[in-house]
Length: 299
Image (cartoon, rainbow, N blue to C red; front, side):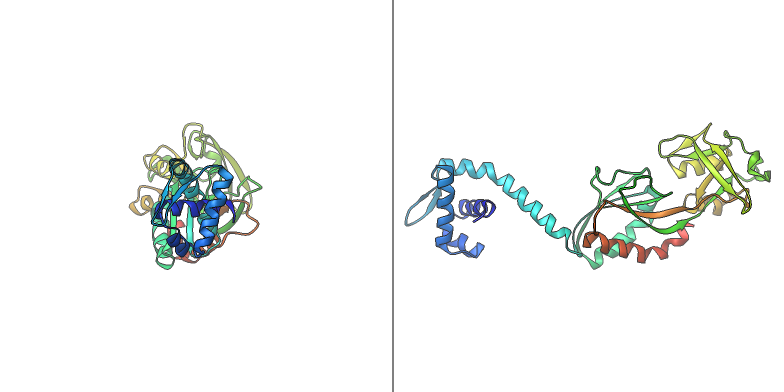
């Protein structure tokens, strides 16, 4: 008998005080339970139980030993269960990192639909706009709207393109510009996960230009940049979901419409598995299937 099973048998015997009942619940014979306890006592060099014809009770050493090993045995049982569940498609835990906007709008109905199909699945969701170290931070899956990752060891799959446009407040001087060369670094509101400057690459289909953005203002929130642009602080380069409400309300307008920045991508990132665990693969497929219903929100 392996050590884990012996300790589990001992703890159940300590709880039930009846070897026959332990045998029934563990699918063993009463003799096998007795031998397991005896072997454990021989190994420890102490008596764990006092046995009479009427009852079984713990010795003082047995009670101390049971109290000390119970947390460790429970932790091992939980770890074994988690590992087994990790290889089931319909049961287990998923730790997901998602962008704040997507996590508040797109993800909840998708998670609810998935839970309807797989009620034994559980989720831990973390909302963060910046990139994460998916291995060190112990995530099973990260959803990001970004350019291609620089981490060569992370597995990532592009799901769909997310276009961006340049926007500014109506009536501002930026609406009269014909060429992006008229913009200064102070005019351009930069998106940066670390609140730093960024370079904008813009193309009209024949030529391209690179502009430094963020000398006067940068933020790691698209919503903040949209509000700043709507207040007339400058030009922002943002995807549709950050500016949709401002466009509908007339607080922002598309500027320099002939000049297009590179698209971002909605991407799924995974730790460097040789093959995706079934629960992660199942959710990824469901997410990708459900996403078209929300594509208009991403454009």
